[in-house]
Amino acid sequence: MAIVHRFISVVIAVAVPAAAFMAGGNVALEFIVLGAILGFAYWYWGPTGTLL
Image (cartoon, rainbow, N blue to C red; front, side, top):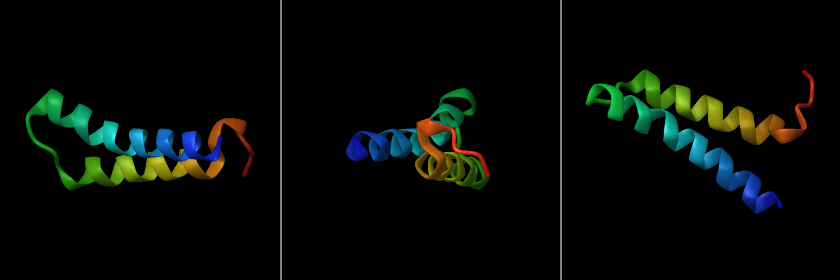
């Protein structure tokens, strides 16, 4: 299950800049950082929704 969880977090991290590229035709650094932050957040908190 841990491999699936890591895979989903990587997919999220890649999907954000990919969606920005599909929408606007270029990828700025802030979309790459946003994707990395969202992917890391999913990896850290995961589907359990643990509170801070």
